[in-house]
Length: 320
Image 1 (cartoon, rainbow, N blue to C red):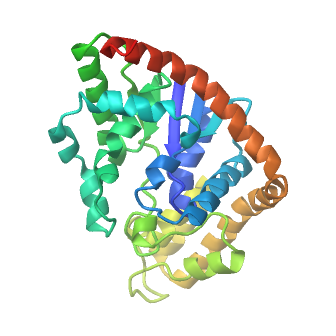
Image 2: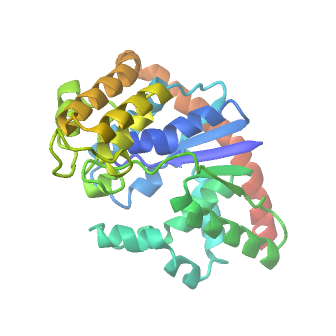
């Protein structure tokens, strides 16, 4: 089974990225032939400063390696190191209906939150389809809110296969129902677009300050509270053991514990989880040659798969 995941280097990675994409992707490297790419072409739709982009790409590589990515099990590469993917995106574009792209929620959401509309932003589902189809991925793990992205890829693959000759394996979405939508400090879904994130490798003092700003209701310390509607508790659950979750939920319901105490306990669990990974990341940052070698090796493995698929697609459309 071949598994593909990708992530944009569009800013510091946060715990929404970690629990929503990173941790599930790292677990899947034990279950099949894993491909994981840094989607730097996609990031160009929102990151226009070359220096910022270079730093963000390096940060993503360091973050994943620090969090447990094993380059022996996962082909880890930069999207831009596989130029054949962009050629494949053009071949897919010729069979992609405008209406299919116009129905995509992501474009509407991003432009509504201030990202400048562009052809790249509008057409990025085609490039994403090329990322997936180019390595013959069997499975693409996504959250339920991203299911539409995979449906577009499946539609494009089927249209190409019908228009020309069957070339592409139609991938199956692996819906990560067990992955919760991670709330941001303001209660919305955690997203860089909303400026409500908690960085996984932020400075401890900055992380603590951010956690202490998590929005809560106005209940007093003495009043009972509902853990199911509390942003602090929803974040606490991500780090806590079942016993810790039950204990805090019970303290919420009987009253006598304030939100400040809950935030303090959340920070302590956050730090216990990420402090060892932070040390590992610092070691990797001192050996960037190794990080670059990992990405180069991953790109070589990916290009072997991509060139085989691209060759078939070129022949199918008549570009022999």
